[in-house]
Amino acid sequence: MNSSADPEITIADAGVADVPALAMLSTACAVNNYAHIAAPDELAAYCEQYHSRRFFAERLADRHCAIRLALLPNGSPVGYMMLDPAELAVGDHIPEVELKRLFVLPRYRGRRLGERLFEHALADARDLHARLVVSCEPDDSARRRFYESLGFVFAGERAFNFGKARYHDLVFVLAGA
Image (cartoon, rainbow, N blue to C red; front, top):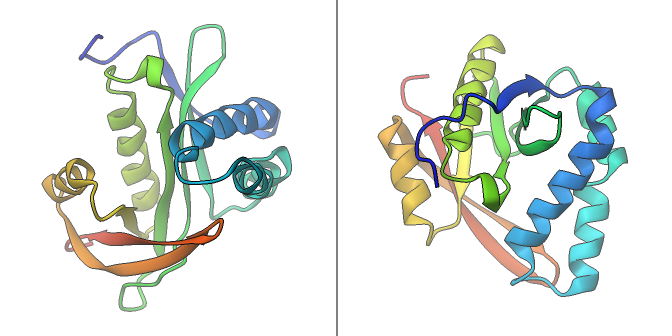
């Protein structure tokens, strides 16, 4: 694994032409991340609702959404991030956007792609004049430490259903933003 940034992999704005590849990448990442907690039919329904071509076409049409892709020289996407309006307002009437997704295919991890995509999320939030909201599972201490090292502070919890199970995330906001 290469621990330095990979200059051959570029970060670019996603566009309508990227929808098929984005849906494929997103579905692959969802299966990789959630197969252990959801039955196949639940995971398929989740992917159809939140990782389909239709979903990404709708998100890209929303001017409050930002999607960036990590692209190989041949144009194949190997990671992406998505900002969307925050579902859980944690602030004091300050516009908020949430980093809804930051995925990198396992084969391409360790090349600082996640860090590069995260830097774009921070810049996009600034461009939108919005506070960035992030979340993680309660037992994900590495991600929590990462967020805290960047100045994020705990802001609350949120509960959500995935399939038949109920889960909780910890929610963080950038301090002073």
